[in-house]
Length: 122
Image 1 (cartoon, one colour):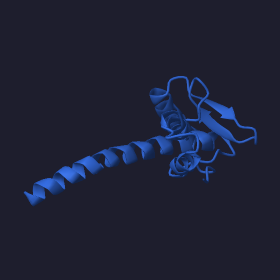
Image 2 (cartoon, helix red, strand yellow):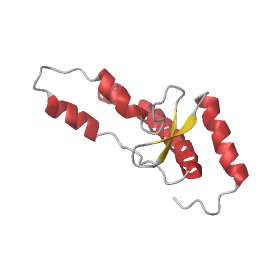
Image 3 (cartoon, one colour):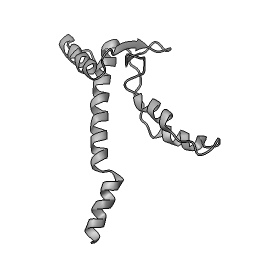
């Protein structure tokens, strides 16, 4: 992401939007020296879905690591940034993207498609 032409006002606008959705959001640095925006309890906002998938996965048995790995591979990860400004702008885009995907996934869920198909065949 090229952030050379991004103004301070644009950066502050992105920061304000993120803090509205995630009060107490702050910049953190990972073990590689890259920056990311985290919630007040330290979770990476861009990659929240990974933690949610781990917490909600229902293992069939102890040997279900293949299914778990498959579930994690379906998730996209957003790499951490080289600068603080880039981290905040990436996070703003990620939040918008997650919103659009969730909204459209709900519109075209399997249940809704099946109901529509059932009506068409009646």
